[in-house]
Amino acid sequence: MIAVDTNILVYAHRAEMPQHRAAERRLRELATGAAAWALPVFCLGEFVRVVTHPKVFQPASTIDQALGAIAALLESDSLRVLMPGERYPLLLAETVRGGRATGNLVFDAQIAAVCREHGATEILTLDRDFARFPGLRLLPLEG
Image (cartoon, rainbow, N blue to C red; front, top):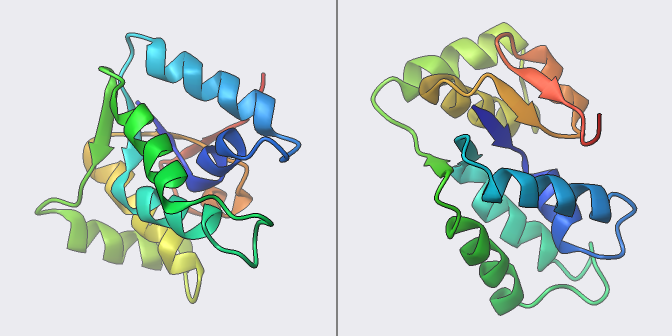
């Protein structure tokens, strides 16, 4: 199962981003396909935080625009929202230790841990920091 990182959501949402068309195309393929794909729950809040931040985007997306983008993704029948379960605390500790994640990298470790818990072994992202977490293969946006 392919998980999608926040940066792909942002690129697909913001037309001014150079990766916009590729991210939008890739999300559309996942959302309309039959194969299960995933959004780690942490990425939903991070997406809203980033696209509505006035120091990141001028103009920033409105709350309604950001939440509307999420609502549209949630309509996909093949989407799974990955929520922490019983094994998550142990997997988080293993992921933090295994990836030597400190500071801001702990957020990525949370995403990697919830992916591991649900069997998502691939992540669509342009964030190379995920390469530090064993068992999670980075997928390029194109190719």
